[in-house]
Amino acid sequence: MKVLLLALSIAAISAKECTKSKAAATVVPPCIQQRIDSIKAQPKWNPPAQVIEYSYGGKTVYLFSANCCDQYNVVYDSDCNYVCAPSGGMTGKGDRKCLGFDSSAKLVKVVWKDERTSP
Image 1 (tube, one colour):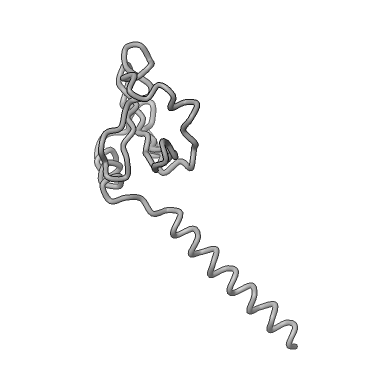
Image 2 (cartoon, rainbow, N blue to C red):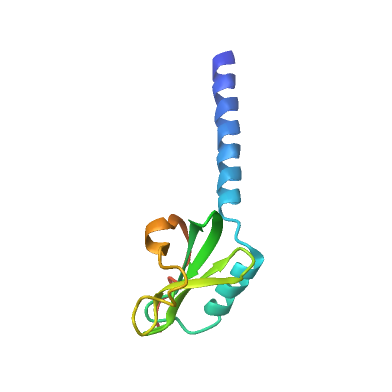
């Protein structure tokens, strides 16, 4: 009986810690969430919008995909300050302010992807 009680206690604690980790992992800065909400208020983009979190230059940054052709894919820091556009635009090479982004940025996670169905 003691063994069963101990096993159940460990399982409950583990589940609680797992829930805390998931909650902490989904925290997005308010200004980034506002930008996502702004995109959600628009008709679905083609290709669908997405926001990807990276570690770049010792900071957490967020890459927002472009709405359409020849537009920059823009990177913002956690305070929504513009960092650079590593890709997109007429040349596909962005604004050339972060040329090493592809090789030095470390993917953390996809924060949001617009998975709404098209009308």
